[in-house]
Length: 55
Image 1: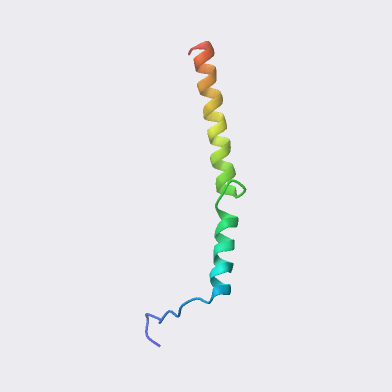
Image 2: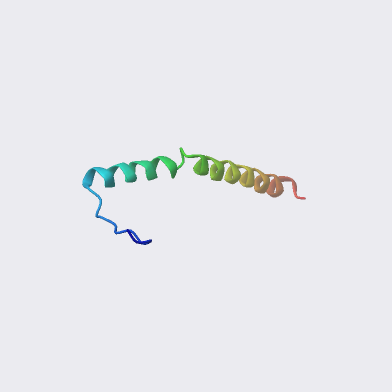
């Protein structure tokens, strides 16, 4: 076989499995989504503090 392997189309079951894995990793329940949520909450808290009390 050459260095570039031929790709075969995915079956419906394989497509569904990869889509399900992608939905588990991305979104608010994933580690990345939770990290973004926590950073957003912290930034909002800082902005509220600045708005109420100033620097």
